[in-house]
Image (tube, rainbow, N blue to C red; front, side, top):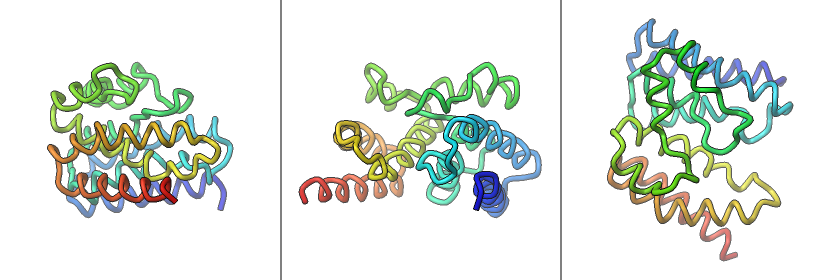
Length: 194
């Protein structure tokens, strides 16, 4: 399956799932544009449709749809275009605003990155929608951390940060996200202990 086919399949899955949660046509259209926007740098930069980060925008949206039940098109669109790890894959805020509107731009701009100073405080004091985007986006990166072969320093750092920052914030934000973080932290710790 080529990169376009995998991206197209993910886009269809996002639309199907969003429609099943009650998102209307206007919301679907905005979310679809956000997914296309988020996939453009991935298609250009990664060159491999099986790269762990290729389907990240859609997977992040699906976490919010399936696990949290978010049905706000702006929040879902912000989740699609948020990228906390790889600057090459980020969509510039100006472009987000032009294509998706200032509401989405504002949400994306407020999501603290993992390397932010006072990350814990920034997450805790952020509006719930911003916290949900940050937690879902980070969770998807963490779920694929084991695929970052040869990057043990990053893996250990990401695990420590997940346990000390993201898990406590998830516990204050949403029970299912908290359960998903607890499971990931436990599983990853066992992997290191082995």
